Length: 251
Ligand SMILES: [Zn+2]
Image (cartoon, rainbow, N blue to C red; front, side, top):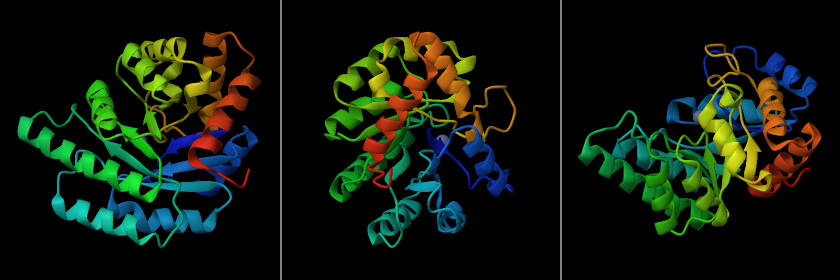
């Protein structure tokens, strides 16, 4: 399996070696590490340097950061391509923390520029859309984004289904074991549009625990139960989706 969304640069991960060992023992061969700020970047490069066969990198900026300076630095970094990255993310919209109208407009303009950058570089997008699911999708459609993974989508299943028809993917976090909204998403979307994520260190199967990639198996089992298919089928299809989406050629 591939955990397509985890924050291994988080300060709670002082034990990445053991975390990756436990992941492997539970069948998680690779982790797509998402970043949310320039401050994490040195650590992110260190980790992909240490574990090139186990960790891949997507570079992003938390949508609650509304600084032109930070975005300029971020775009500069991505444009350099001086390191290996498999996508841009997480990026997107956050209407949970950003409520002011003018700030939301600014957030959207940064998002639009980022979508264009990803397209021009031929990289897929990993999207954060907290309390802004439909709106984020509409921005993506209007910019013609075609390689899109919606992570931990908290919007409506109907909106998600429409996005699947556009060829978008959805990664289901480990919180699916208790979240009725995520379970509903799984019921409505085809397995062919799903991937597995932990969003470590948050969204653990047990609320409040530190999450880690080894817990991916809980998502796989819950999806298998909802879809009434063998867990092996969930593992196979979601892994294939991740390999093709991120072009993980080594597998
Ligand atoms: Zn995340």
